[in-house]
Image (tube, rainbow, N blue to C red; front, side, top):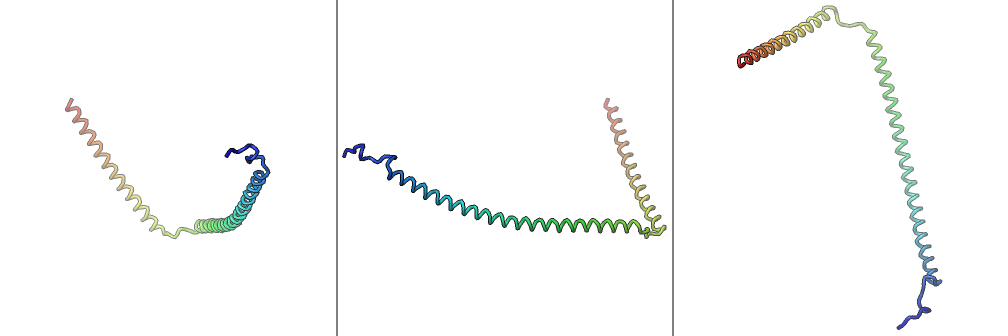
Length: 133
């Protein structure tokens, strides 16, 4: 079987061109349906996202108002506490001051003792060093 040039189908034949055009139309139609479906899904997601954003905005507004109210309440309590006199009597204040002074003296005595031990250790180290020389 020898085929002649006249019997072969070429790309320029009308049947091939109509087949290619039909295939392109089918692919174009399928792609358009996919694009429309994706845009519909995107719009649904955007609506749900807007609902979430609205909920978060209202929650943040509620937290802001609560924080503002708390700040105002704390400021009022502070002002009220500053205007009230001290409820401790003089004897109680003197007792607290005496205990604080005693605690400070105790800490000072411990610090002095520690310094004395450090000084003794340094002196002994110097004597040992001089003795070796």
